[in-house]
Structures are given as C-alpha cells and as structure tokens.
Amino acid sequence: MKTIPTLFLGSLLAAASAYAAEDKIIEHNSFMDHGDGHLMDMDGAMVMGQNKDTLAPGCDKVSEDVEITVHAGHKYAKNYPGTMFGFSEHEWKVKPCTRLTVHFINEDHVRHQWMMHGLPKFLYDKGMFHLEVTGPAKVSGTLILPAEDRTYLVHCDIAQHMEKGMKGQLIVGKGGTPFPSIPGLTDLAIPDNYGPPVAPAAPVAPAAPVADKPVPPPTAATPAPQDQPTSGGFILGVILGAFGTPFAISTYRQRFQGMSAGEVLHHLGHAGLGLVDRLLGFIAALTKGGK
Ligand SMILES: [Cu+2]
Image (tube, rainbow, N blue to C red; front, side, top):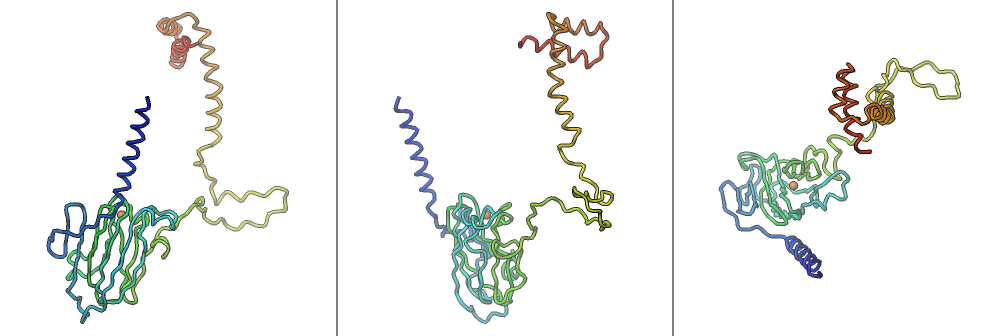
C-alpha cells in the first residue's frame, strides 16, 4: 500500500525538478537572417530592426557603444501596485547616435517583448526595433539611434502586457515628451478611482436652521440614486418568498392529500381554478412524497 504515496511523491519531485530545470535561461544566438535586420529562429526568438553599422542622418560617427541588460517578468511587477508584468528598469538614457545593444532576458514562461517605436522608417523599415522571446530565455539585438533629442516608447505588445506594467521609455539626448503610465515614473493615463461617482455640485442652499439631526441636502438638483440593488421592493419580495412559499406548499399538500399528480390536475381542471392554482397544486402533489 506504500507504493502509491511513494509513486505520487516521486512524480511530484520529478515534476518539481523538471520545472526548476526549465528556469535556466536559454540564450538564443543562432538566427536565420530574413533581411532588413529581421532575424528569427525556430524557437520563438526574434530581432527586428537590427542595425550595427548604418548611421542615421546627422550622425558623423557612433557617439558611444552602450550595452544594457533588461530583465522581464512577473516578479518585476511586485513594486508597482496594479501591475502584473514588468521590466527590471523602465527608463534608459543614451546620447544621440549611440550604438545600443540590448540584452533582453525573459524570466517568465510566456512570450515577452522589448519593442521600441517611432524610429525613422528610412532606416528601420517598420519604424521599430524589437526583441521577442518565449522564456525563460535571452535574446540580444543592436541598433544605432538617431541624432535627434527624443523619447521613444518601449513596451511589450502581447495583449494587456503593456497595460499591466510592461512599459518604459528610452530617452535619447535631452528627450522629448514623456509617456504616461510608466511604472514608478509617470502619471497613469487613466487614474485609478476607487470612490463612488461624484455627483454634480448642488446649488448652494440657504443656511438651514440649527437642528438636532443633520438636514438632508435638497434633492431637486441632485436626484437620489435609484439603481441600488437592495431597494425596498426587492427586500419585501425576498421576505414574502421566504415565508410564503412553505406556507403555500403545506396548504396545498393538505388539500390534495392522497391524490396522485394526475388526479390533482384532473380535480383542479374540474374545479375551474386559475393557472397559478393548478401549478401550485401540481407542485404540492409532486413534493408530498418527500415528507
Ligand atoms: Cu510581455
């Protein structure tokens, strides 16, 4: 009899160790080159907009080589209430004409991206630079930034990942307009609101005479909320139903004692009673066997 728990424990341990082994970060570095800086492999890793040597107009040379490592995953959300995903940093600053290499490490067991928008299309044909990998895994890519001072949106484009925290910005030079809803950095695009809807301000009423109880505000300008689920009618209905139903069933049970359902229907038909009466009698006949 000990075999079953032992087998269960064994398979649990095996599953746990397999899960732990999966958490090793796999590095993707052997891609197929699809042209225009678009690299892919068969395991779900992708680089778009790779550019190691073409300078943007206005750049005489690469101003400096910068490497950043960005971790992505659920655990990076924990410092930002209301988020589910996050990057290890949500803002990066570089000089114009920087050659930037991004090492993107996805620590979750889902797809994540480091996707940057707003690049000039004559240099980056989709207007973006993009790293993507199904984790836990690492993917790296390089681009050369334009000469202009500007702030670029960086996000994960998988459905709801940006809205749930995977949003950042890359500031080139002095930067431009910052983006909203960057965790820990900028104000929310849609502020949280946990309060009741704010009623329009009522016209100022003349001073009320001093009374023991607070005087309710005038209701003419501010209609009282009528849509509350626990209205008086609803409560009355619940009370009537709770007390009335057992009473009705016991009454009908006594009235049709000893009759089968068919006999009750027959009797009620002859008695010329209403539809509700017939229905209640029928229910009583069906339920009387239970007692
Ligand atoms: Cu994501």
